[in-house]
Length: 249
Image 1 (cartoon, rainbow, N blue to C red):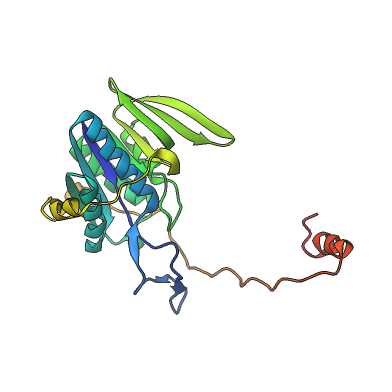
Image 2 (image 1 turned 30 degrees about the horizontal axis):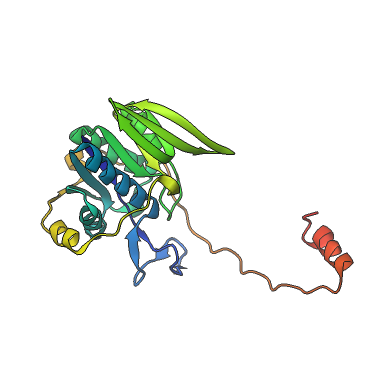
């Protein structure tokens, strides 16, 4: 079985970020970067499928050369080889990411693609769905279980108010949610082996993709500072504040 999984390099969501002087972007220098949290579940599930069915795991990332760190991390977990599409992420919208991934997928022809349901930096939650639409493949998003057999994937999905099971014919796109698995840590032997595993570097031109952003970010603004709390004397005062000041009752 040929399995393709994706990873994205993101700023640590627990880091304190600040805006640049003209509010056109974030200052990320000096901040720790790591693999997108949801992508870790996709990588783990890809490795589990390889362990159960054999085959290989291809790890794909889009971004600058620093993204090789996240690819190496996935290779240390158990991936077999990597593909880095070099591009300036500040100039690419979700459609552009989906177009590039779809081109890589067409080139690799995997049996299944496992992705994180969204990236924690932008939370657009579009790429998996766009890739499936562009390829004309079935999709199963927000997966918390995934079983593959006889050319089909049975996926348990997180939905509003509960869960649902869907069955999709392979090849298909599956996006991972939190309960899908428990991502493993890379072992020291795995880290050493990952240094020797190949990473192919491609450009949008190599893939025949012309990037035309449909989404342009005009600027950023920080949320307003939280106001200080207030201590009231009694329940009647609390109800008055909730009704007339906070207007939540």
